[in-house]
Image 1 (cartoon, rainbow, N blue to C red):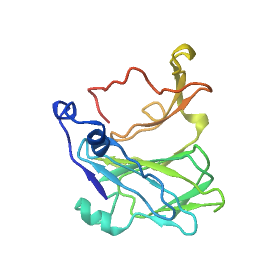
Image 2 (cartoon, one colour):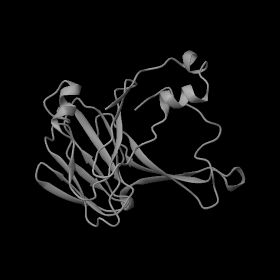
Image 3 (cartoon, rainbow, N blue to C red):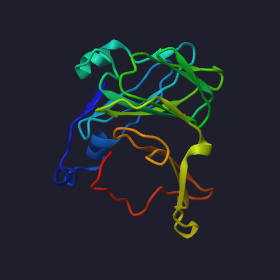
Length: 202
Protein backbone atom coordinates (compact mmCIF):
# COMPACT_ATOMS: atom_id res chain seq x y z
CA UNK A 1 0.00 0.00 0.00
CA UNK A 2 1.32 3.40 -1.05
CA UNK A 3 0.44 5.93 1.67
CA UNK A 4 0.14 9.63 0.80
CA UNK A 5 0.15 12.27 3.54
CA UNK A 6 -2.14 15.30 3.59
CA UNK A 7 -0.57 18.48 2.23
CA UNK A 8 -1.50 22.11 2.86
CA UNK A 9 -2.30 24.23 -0.20
CA UNK A 10 0.37 26.77 0.82
CA UNK A 11 2.96 23.98 0.86
CA UNK A 12 1.77 22.68 -2.52
CA UNK A 13 2.42 26.11 -4.08
CA UNK A 14 6.12 25.82 -3.17
CA UNK A 15 6.62 22.49 -4.97
CA UNK A 16 8.17 22.11 -8.40
CA UNK A 17 6.77 19.76 -11.04
CA UNK A 18 8.47 16.68 -9.64
CA UNK A 19 7.38 17.56 -6.12
CA UNK A 20 3.75 17.84 -7.24
CA UNK A 21 4.00 14.53 -9.10
CA UNK A 22 5.39 12.84 -5.99
CA UNK A 23 2.52 14.11 -3.84
CA UNK A 24 -0.47 13.66 -6.14
CA UNK A 25 0.19 11.54 -9.23
CA UNK A 26 -0.80 7.87 -9.24
CA UNK A 27 1.14 6.38 -12.15
CA UNK A 28 0.74 2.62 -11.77
CA UNK A 29 -2.93 1.64 -11.62
CA UNK A 30 -3.11 -1.74 -13.39
CA UNK A 31 -0.65 -4.60 -12.87
CA UNK A 32 -1.31 -8.12 -14.18
CA UNK A 33 -2.80 -10.46 -11.56
CA UNK A 34 -2.37 -7.97 -8.72
CA UNK A 35 -4.18 -5.15 -6.99
CA UNK A 36 -2.65 -1.69 -6.63
CA UNK A 37 -3.59 0.51 -3.71
CA UNK A 38 -2.92 4.14 -2.80
CA UNK A 39 -4.16 5.35 0.59
CA UNK A 40 -4.58 9.11 0.95
CA UNK A 41 -4.88 10.80 4.33
CA UNK A 42 -7.10 13.33 2.52
CA UNK A 43 -10.53 11.89 3.40
CA UNK A 44 -8.85 8.49 4.04
CA UNK A 45 -9.79 7.42 0.51
CA UNK A 46 -8.15 4.45 -1.20
CA UNK A 47 -7.78 4.33 -4.99
CA UNK A 48 -6.38 1.60 -7.17
CA UNK A 49 -6.84 -0.97 -9.89
CA UNK A 50 -7.24 -4.71 -10.29
CA UNK A 51 -6.42 -6.55 -13.54
CA UNK A 52 -6.84 -10.33 -13.22
CA UNK A 53 -5.46 -12.28 -16.17
CA UNK A 54 -4.26 -15.77 -15.29
CA UNK A 55 -5.89 -16.00 -11.86
CA UNK A 56 -8.49 -14.40 -9.64
CA UNK A 57 -7.48 -11.49 -7.43
CA UNK A 58 -8.78 -10.51 -4.01
CA UNK A 59 -7.62 -8.03 -1.41
CA UNK A 60 -5.97 -10.04 1.33
CA UNK A 61 -5.91 -9.88 5.09
CA UNK A 62 -2.62 -7.98 5.12
CA UNK A 63 -4.54 -4.85 4.06
CA UNK A 64 -6.92 -5.27 6.98
CA UNK A 65 -3.96 -5.30 9.34
CA UNK A 66 -2.64 -2.06 7.83
CA UNK A 67 -6.07 -0.44 8.26
CA UNK A 68 -6.56 -1.77 11.79
CA UNK A 69 -9.46 -4.10 10.90
CA UNK A 70 -9.89 -7.83 10.45
CA UNK A 71 -10.87 -7.56 6.76
CA UNK A 72 -10.75 -4.88 4.05
CA UNK A 73 -14.40 -3.73 4.01
CA UNK A 74 -15.14 -4.10 7.71
CA UNK A 75 -15.51 -0.31 7.99
CA UNK A 76 -15.40 0.73 4.33
CA UNK A 77 -17.51 0.83 1.16
CA UNK A 78 -16.17 0.05 -2.31
CA UNK A 79 -16.97 1.40 -5.76
CA UNK A 80 -15.66 -0.35 -8.90
CA UNK A 81 -15.91 0.65 -12.57
CA UNK A 82 -14.67 -1.78 -15.23
CA UNK A 83 -12.84 0.03 -18.04
CA UNK A 84 -11.50 -3.16 -19.64
CA UNK A 85 -12.94 -6.40 -20.97
CA UNK A 86 -15.75 -8.38 -19.37
CA UNK A 87 -15.17 -9.75 -15.90
CA UNK A 88 -16.83 -10.92 -12.73
CA UNK A 89 -16.85 -9.73 -9.14
CA UNK A 90 -17.93 -12.25 -6.52
CA UNK A 91 -19.07 -10.73 -3.22
CA UNK A 92 -19.46 -13.23 -0.37
CA UNK A 93 -20.41 -15.95 -2.86
CA UNK A 94 -22.72 -13.84 -5.06
CA UNK A 95 -21.28 -13.46 -8.58
CA UNK A 96 -21.88 -10.32 -10.63
CA UNK A 97 -20.94 -10.18 -14.31
CA UNK A 98 -19.36 -6.76 -14.88
CA UNK A 99 -18.96 -5.82 -18.54
CA UNK A 100 -17.09 -2.91 -20.09
CA UNK A 101 -18.17 0.30 -18.31
CA UNK A 102 -20.40 -1.56 -15.86
CA UNK A 103 -19.90 -0.73 -12.19
CA UNK A 104 -20.45 -2.39 -8.84
CA UNK A 105 -21.04 -0.82 -5.45
CA UNK A 106 -20.09 -3.05 -2.51
CA UNK A 107 -21.41 -2.07 0.89
CA UNK A 108 -19.61 -2.08 4.22
CA UNK A 109 -19.22 -5.48 5.79
CA UNK A 110 -18.58 -7.63 2.72
CA UNK A 111 -15.91 -10.10 3.80
CA UNK A 112 -14.76 -11.65 0.53
CA UNK A 113 -14.55 -9.82 -2.81
CA UNK A 114 -12.98 -11.77 -5.69
CA UNK A 115 -12.18 -10.29 -9.12
CA UNK A 116 -11.81 -12.29 -12.35
CA UNK A 117 -11.61 -11.77 -16.11
CA UNK A 118 -13.83 -13.72 -18.51
CA UNK A 119 -11.36 -13.58 -21.43
CA UNK A 120 -7.66 -13.45 -20.60
CA UNK A 121 -6.98 -11.94 -24.04
CA UNK A 122 -9.01 -8.86 -23.12
CA UNK A 123 -8.77 -8.73 -19.34
CA UNK A 124 -11.06 -6.73 -17.13
CA UNK A 125 -9.59 -3.54 -15.67
CA UNK A 126 -11.37 -2.77 -12.44
CA UNK A 127 -10.73 0.80 -11.27
CA UNK A 128 -11.87 1.30 -7.69
CA UNK A 129 -12.33 3.84 -4.92
CA UNK A 130 -12.86 2.86 -1.31
CA UNK A 131 -14.00 5.16 1.50
CA UNK A 132 -14.84 4.92 5.21
CA UNK A 133 -18.47 3.96 5.85
CA UNK A 134 -20.75 4.32 8.87
CA UNK A 135 -23.53 1.98 7.76
CA UNK A 136 -24.21 -0.79 5.26
CA UNK A 137 -25.98 -0.27 1.95
CA UNK A 138 -26.72 -3.20 -0.37
CA UNK A 139 -24.32 -4.28 -3.07
CA UNK A 140 -25.63 -3.13 -6.45
CA UNK A 141 -24.57 -3.35 -10.08
CA UNK A 142 -24.90 -0.18 -12.18
CA UNK A 143 -24.89 -0.30 -15.99
CA UNK A 144 -24.20 2.61 -18.38
CA UNK A 145 -27.96 2.79 -19.11
CA UNK A 146 -28.64 3.56 -15.44
CA UNK A 147 -26.14 6.38 -14.91
CA UNK A 148 -26.98 10.06 -14.65
CA UNK A 149 -25.10 11.75 -17.56
CA UNK A 150 -24.28 15.46 -17.76
CA UNK A 151 -22.71 16.99 -20.88
CA UNK A 152 -20.53 20.07 -20.38
CA UNK A 153 -17.93 22.16 -22.21
CA UNK A 154 -17.61 23.25 -25.81
CA UNK A 155 -15.80 22.08 -28.93
CA UNK A 156 -14.37 25.60 -29.30
CA UNK A 157 -12.47 25.19 -26.02
CA UNK A 158 -11.66 21.50 -26.67
CA UNK A 159 -13.39 20.33 -23.50
CA UNK A 160 -16.73 18.95 -24.66
CA UNK A 161 -17.33 16.03 -22.34
CA UNK A 162 -19.96 13.83 -20.72
CA UNK A 163 -19.76 13.12 -17.01
CA UNK A 164 -21.42 9.76 -16.35
CA UNK A 165 -22.47 9.78 -12.70
CA UNK A 166 -22.50 6.19 -11.48
CA UNK A 167 -22.59 6.51 -7.71
CA UNK A 168 -24.76 9.52 -6.86
CA UNK A 169 -28.00 9.75 -4.82
CA UNK A 170 -30.17 9.64 -7.97
CA UNK A 171 -28.73 6.21 -8.82
CA UNK A 172 -28.04 4.49 -5.49
CA UNK A 173 -27.37 5.16 -1.82
CA UNK A 174 -23.85 5.22 -0.42
CA UNK A 175 -22.40 6.51 2.83
CA UNK A 176 -20.14 9.13 1.24
CA UNK A 177 -18.62 7.62 -1.88
CA UNK A 178 -19.31 9.33 -5.22
CA UNK A 179 -17.91 8.03 -8.51
CA UNK A 180 -18.28 8.78 -12.18
CA UNK A 181 -16.63 8.32 -15.55
CA UNK A 182 -15.81 11.32 -17.73
CA UNK A 183 -15.82 10.73 -21.48
CA UNK A 184 -14.29 13.31 -23.82
CA UNK A 185 -16.10 13.94 -27.11
CA UNK A 186 -14.07 13.14 -30.28
CA UNK A 187 -11.46 15.80 -31.01
CA UNK A 188 -11.53 17.22 -27.47
CA UNK A 189 -8.49 17.29 -25.21
CA UNK A 190 -9.28 18.61 -21.73
CA UNK A 191 -11.45 17.37 -18.91
CA UNK A 192 -11.92 20.82 -17.38
CA UNK A 193 -10.24 24.16 -17.94
CA UNK A 194 -9.28 26.10 -15.98
CA UNK A 195 -8.24 23.57 -13.35
CA UNK A 196 -10.11 24.06 -10.09
CA UNK A 197 -10.93 22.50 -6.75
CA UNK A 198 -14.08 22.07 -4.69
CA UNK A 199 -14.37 22.82 -0.97
CA UNK A 200 -16.71 19.85 -0.56
CA UNK A 201 -14.82 16.57 -0.78
CA UNK A 202 -15.97 12.97 -1.27
